[in-house]
Length: 147
Image 1 (cartoon, rainbow, N blue to C red):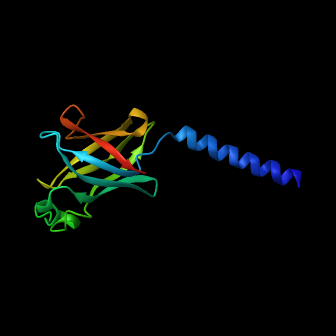
Image 2 (cartoon, helix red, strand yellow; image 1 turned 60 degrees about the horizontal axis):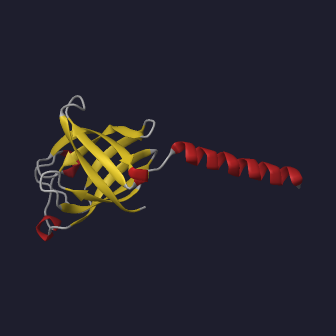
Image 3 (cartoon, rainbow, N blue to C red; image 1 turned 180 degrees about the horizontal axis):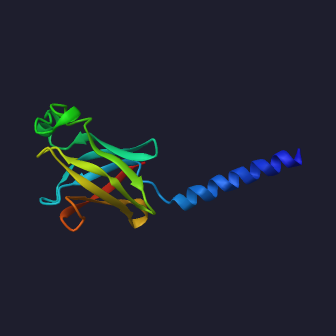
């Protein structure tokens, strides 16, 4: 009986250490803010699928946008409703920076390489979309709504 208790304790300890080592996760709800107007745009849900982070538009604060479709998008996202649209795909954690995926701008239909990093104890997410190298892009800061 003591061996079983000890092995359970060790397994729990190892899992806790792994969770702490992995650091905070961007999974949850994020309020987006337009980097030009500085007004709140909507809410994106980041979720994990097969070890990668994806993000879809949950809500828009503009009633006109809520009924829009992505007519400028290409591929499987063409003519899909903006609400529910997956705009962030295939982001992988690389030491506290998530990259290797892409982000879609539904207004233009353009897809950019993407990098993102948590700040302020996981309450802010800096999301950078770029072409080629990160130098040629722009960043937005998203604010955590909930996990």
